[in-house]
Image: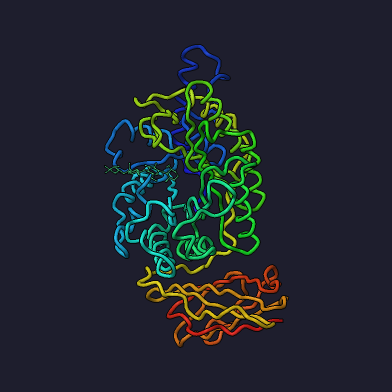
Length: 475
Ligand code: G3I
């Protein structure tokens, strides 16, 4: 996982040397010259704590020299504001367009900045063809989209917002959408698909109004992440969008939210920060957000949702760090000061826990509809239902193992691969053999399945996938 802070050392050292030299020339004691902890840009200051400081970028502003000047000077991460969304990257089904996203990615990488990908699955900003889809056709289209886009950007995007805004504004439950209506498991399918396509990217669930720990929506997402971690669904991170305003204000329990998610074993990223307001009040809130992130080791970094107030989706709320002319606001100064005050160091994040080790080497040609499904068992024992996503030369498969009317304490599912195919890796199961009949047995944490419940495992392979229903044996 490429989660190293972006090296900004040479520029920082040059700046400090010049400042120290001018301090001496002016007869000022060297002791007041900035230390290595007092970097002079947002990115360099964040990097000194092992974090990034990013901004949303719009491709059509890359010709604005003021905009690009601030971007290159201050930030060491970018998120395409709209250019990686589904309507932008797959405007017609199976016709992918990366031109505008590539403009941002290429600019960022040339500048040594990291790229956050936003977003692979979302109820909003779907292209027309997807908006009118439902059921298994939509599920397959989602899998295909995630696989193609994440594969295309493999090695360039360090973190993906895999799923965006899937929870309802109140009540703590899921938001209704065409994706949600494909089945409650659509989110975990999205994460497994993203992991298979890019095993090295950090995979986030991203949402707004999950900043305040006491809100039902926050609790809903927390429960989902806890469940995902318990069942081995590959999730690495929660993105707190953090659009703060009078209706959704910053709260002092924000740090508790970060700490609580981190305690589940996921990272936290502040993904779309903007704070409506002005002057010292706004500056103080920005500093509070920075302090909270720096206090939590698993808070990887902060992204603001635009550069100048005039670039904001909420421009009238003047929520950003630079005014419309590109001048630094009080909020900029307080943010930089808070970054330079330091905090916990963000350690290099460990690699994902369930990575397939052999990612697909070619894009999928056509997603395969669910195969091999069987109804839930009515008796004791277990059954297995099998879903596959295949492309030329490879496939990933998800197998759902269900207990019947009695709990099982262990299980094994067997599938037979066609000649020439091989399993390259598995997650949430122990594979015996790699060709022919391959047996997948439970691992320590998912052997027990309550009566009527189920668990899932996955595997990846080369060649063509197995067909037919997996045999399931309970113990
Ligand atoms: O580019 C077209 C332009 O050609 C056309 O004339 C104009 C007419 O409306 O629309 C322009 O596209 C707009 C696009 O922003 C670029 O400015 C879209 O209409 C507009 O809907 C789109 O809004 C974006 C919004 O997401 C859409 O949901 C905002 O820029 C973007 O900042 C915002 O970002 C979201 C995050 O993705 C998710 N979290 C919330 C956040 C704020 O809404």
